[in-house]
Image (cartoon, rainbow, N blue to C red; front, side):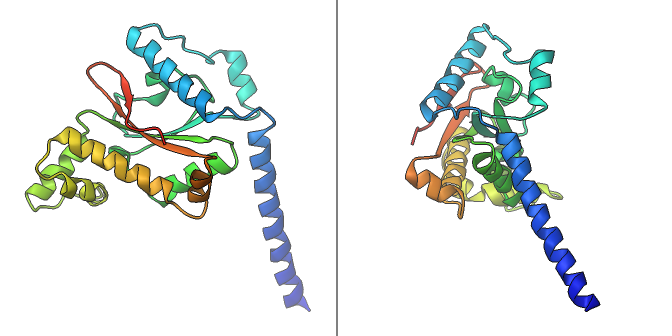
Length: 228
């Protein structure tokens, strides 16, 4: 009898935990109207244009807005970017607190942790636009090209980045760094579009859009590689 009660206790605790997670997610998402895909793209393009022209608005950064966001968040887009210190998405797109759900790692590659974060933003926060933001002179992609060309191995965990970027390197062996950066971006975009069980059905139905983009360090401009 004691053993049965013990098992029942943990089953109930697990169910309560799941319900609390769902409730917390619903609280985060709230009832704010969902931003359409077209409007989300327009906001990013307009924000980047302001940034490149030096006319930034620095929106939604006041203390009052910070306080409001302590209760919920409603990012209108997800940006997967490189960890490079020169490309912070909120600045590049001239957005404010709560606007963008950002995942950053060198070489803008993805793994289960980043995928889980992206899925959470789609499923629970209501974001429908995913932007894979690559950039000019990416150090991670350059290191991958050089390491593979030398038939070497990068030190420590840096090798995991080389391995992730290797397909793009192999596909652009005779091309320059920019071509490899863009090939890597396309590979990650395709991986996101085909990721199951959450993203692929939403992409196929048109509910979620995944696009690649390329940031110029020289001009600050973001060029969207394609808009599917």
